Amino acid sequence: MHVRENLGRLSILALRKRREGLTKLLPPLGEVLRGSLMERYLTCGNPDCKCARGERHGPIWYLSVTLDQKRRSGRTVPAEQVEQVRHWIDNYYQVKERLEKISDINRELLARQKKQASRKTRA
Image 1 (cartoon, one colour):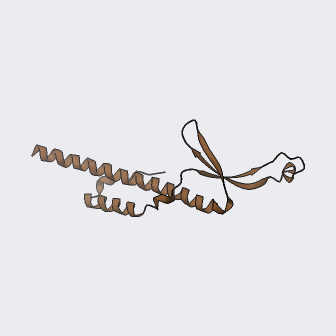
Image 2 (tube, rainbow, N blue to C red):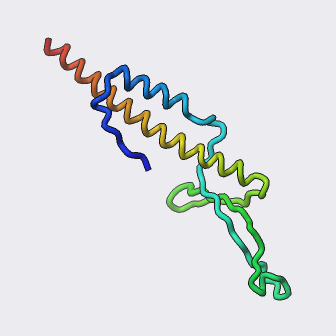
Image 3 (cartoon, rainbow, N blue to C red):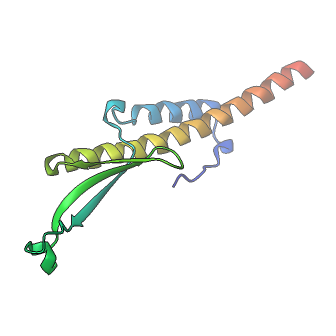
């Protein structure tokens, strides 16, 4: 969860440097994935199978993505791709968090520009 910082105490130069630093810390945008990775164990329904005795099949990795309030999309992920998918999901959350921080800085810079403009108008 993103915690809002008190940016009012920083100079304009410090805000710009912080924004620049955050943009440099963004992970590669081609390696971003929104979704949840779930580990599932399934039963096949065959009465002679081990899963009928409680030893379920799995793990089966499943990627779930909420598209909107009514629709979800999902697919299985091969075991050899699980680490890559985890990494891409982590990258998504890093991008999201850093974009929120950049947005906070930009709002502060806009507010200061507005103050400067109103001072010039009065003078």
